[in-house]
Image 1 (cartoon, rainbow, N blue to C red):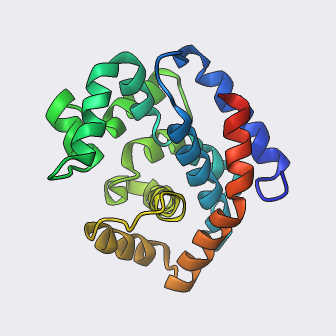
Image 2: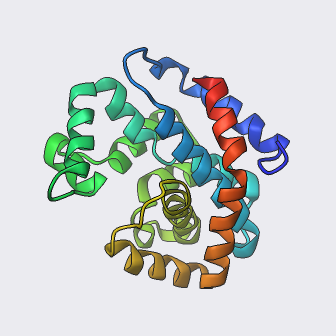
Length: 206
């Protein structure tokens, strides 16, 4: 727990309990959990640099893709089609594939679930607007933090070069947060250093 921290592990344990109703034996959610915990770890790392609460940033990172989990469990065949569209000859983004198949996106579904769970407004905003923080009003900076952490998790742990369109998105997020490319690189290295702990935690909750 050296990199993640005790408070953050407590948060992850809470989240496991919150998501317990969505468990399934048919679907491997390992990558979902790895990405969620990596996003949370990146958000916590960056939070002092943008004057946000580390604990709130971490929990928002854990929760940001809850809409994907709803799709995965409640519409499993369609969820597999989303994955196929993302990997196809002409790859789509998650949002494009979800809109094509479900007419809703994971931020929209996640927002509805978060409101139904009566989560704090800050978490609802992060779930709904981590892909478009400019639409988040007073929570614009917090949502930009989660959006940048989301990108960092993909860049550091996926082992793939992010799509070219992510460059412009990342530049806009860095500008919103007044962060430098050096701070972005430091965040990626922090995630690489935390990878063993992230993998260990995910292995324990599978």
